[in-house]
Image (cartoon, rainbow, N blue to C red; front, side):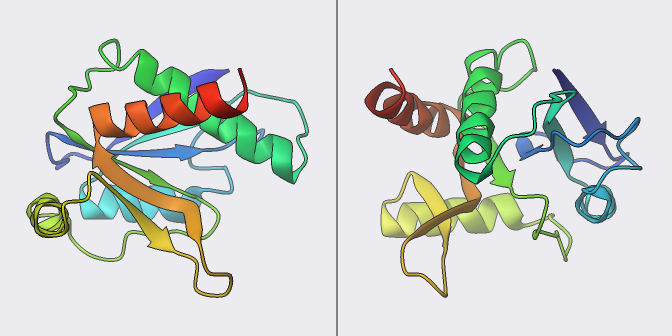
Length: 157
């Protein structure tokens, strides 16, 4: 499996995006995530694609688990990827997520919201089925890693 960094020429330091794809594309511009990758590039986002090269055809539950495992491994090796604990990271589900505006004030607005609400992680809501949706979640690298680490140990170990 490989980790691919797609970086625009105007990416914002300290703001990282992650997505997951186990599609069999030869390069990032041929895969199913092309709309997300293009929108990230246009918005100035640095986006990491995890799971490329995983040829296992996973069902829904195993696919969700593998996505979480790969994000966990990526964050565990965060220093190797140049991520710092206090930087902001957002996971985006590439199947139904786009970045539709400039990100020039995204970090400041998200940090202000997190400070005002005393949240260390922010998830998008599931509108049709009340509860958390893992399609988008954001927080400081260290907080996201600790959250996933707890889930991994409580659920899979």
